[in-house]
Length: 196
Image (cartoon, rainbow, N blue to C red):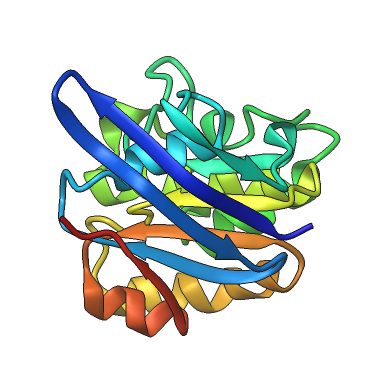
């Protein structure tokens, strides 16, 4: 079922973050939500995931149990290795092949036994991305939300990773949050713009 957002409103105090926002999303494929920092992109995705409630408006076609997400923050457990962090939503023994597949896809397999304090910012970001991809494929998620998933990555590495994950978008809806217009245009043809 396609996702439809109707007249969504959200404010914090006197600050109107979303005002009568409406959008239609396809069942599969990739859509970028683009806009400047602080414009409401993360608030919108938190509402889509059911982590926040809108003041008014409605969303149709969402099963929050069938969503996987790369959050804006990496959210890695410092006492877990990279492999343990990436595989936290599955049984790593039963899903070892799947875990290896996506950790290799983000080019971190040789670093799988390192702890977060041994990783660079870009490596932490890729670990968070691998975690979301593992859950998305294992749980057959309908929606994959990625909030600035390629932050801190150089262009060549980003392009290599994108080429490996785009086949997933044939099976589910990928919603990619970015403030980089060039990145939005390079990833997908459909861009939803959040503006003042």
